[in-house]
Image (cartoon, rainbow, N blue to C red):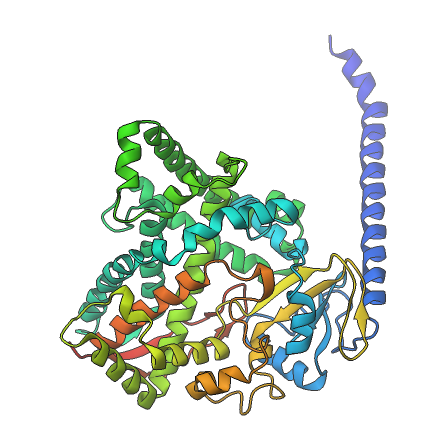
Amino acid sequence: MFSWLSSWLPESLPRLWLWVASLAVTLGLFQLTRLLARRQKFLQALKSFPGPPTHWLLGHANEIKEEGGLDTVVSWANTYPCAHQLWMGNFIGFLNIYDPDYTKAVYSRGDPKAFDIYGFFLPWIGRGLLVLDGPKWFQHRKLLTPAFHSEVLKPYVDVFVGSTKVMLDKWDKKIQSDKCVNIFPDVGHMALDSLMKCIFGRSSENQSQSDTSYCQAIGKLTLLMQQRMAVFHYHNDFYYYWFTSHGRKFLQACKVAHDYTDKVIKARKAALKEEEEQEKIQGKKRLDFLDILLGAGDESKTQLSDADLRAEVDTFMFEGHDTTTSAISWFLYCIALHPEHQQRCREEIQEILGNRDTIQWEDLGKMTYLTMCIKESFRLYPPVPQVYRQLNKPVTFMDGRSIPEGSLVSLHIYALHRNPSVWDKPEVFDPQRFSPENSSTRHPYAFVPFSAGPRNCIGQQFAMMETKAVIALCLLHFEFSPEPSKQPIKRLQLVLGAKNGIYLNLKKLM
């Protein structure tokens, strides 16, 4: 009955496998040829910019690993003025810049983000403002700008205050048994709680199980994304998603996040169809981010599609969570090291508030010394230490060197902010750098914690507002001092974190 099978196997099966093997080898050689051609293109583009020696396979990956990588790049910046080659593996070469004039030459133009890096984000945040380019980027930027107008942001201060008070109560309970607290995870939870309220109009506290799953998925996605950046062989999409458990976990978390966002958008759009609900939302004391997006439209009445809505919501969730966590946590670390600046900030806040124990919108603009300290903290510990672009036309720098269209450029914000040719004694914490007098004479591209040019961070006012409100309340309630036995170890990833957390000693004041 099965005699045909036995006669087919000996001859046909080996032929089939031989054909598959031949196809695999052909595809492999084709891919290798493309990579070699690309490497040669980058080598030619970067020939005028010497750099540190590279590993034959890993490029500079070993030198810029998570621990110690930031300081390594700073040392390279002192050796190679203005810019040098930076290789992620041996086939992707960037021009790594850390000079204000070089920064202006590239980042004042609005070139697109480098897809070799930001393409990793697509399965999660889709084609939102972070990765879009061209007319669609311009359209989204225009549609989203009203969401960050000061009149929209004002009511968010109450949100930040509420979330911060939950965190402060948590710290109050913790220090009853141990004065030393790892503030980083608690600040992260507070930032996520604030975002849930600002984006969806709901809290991450005492919520439904679906909300809990969403918050857990966001935490997983940010961690997995950071880890992927640090592992060279995870950069290949095919290998990462098909052959690693890490990649499969990432896709599973994406599905949870997308299901939640889709569900909320669908429910909100259905509610908006009812005239009564429309009037209710229009009369709300505070519009959340999703309300603004659903009502966004340009002169041609073009509105965001459901896919665009989800992409922008997920983008804001990513960009507004980890970056704020980093900014606030590193500021508290800086201020703990410098009690004289901490006390001066506290006295300024107390003078502004008087007998009040909460923060209002009008208070934020009066916190001048606190703002100077925050900016100095951003200089030393920029929340996003590095950003990337791909040139859509050639650029020639002031020293005569140039790079062609298609070149990849990395702006190393951390190294720029510690460049001794730009900043006097760059390792010293000195808020006076940001006094009105000193700020007026500084190069406009010397301090760029929110990137620079037309593609700078659209949410920077939101971030500064939240940072000031949260920190002001923290300083009113606690005195912070460093824990010598647990110094934070800087972690080089998409967002500046601490490998071992940020431990501070807390003393209650109120």
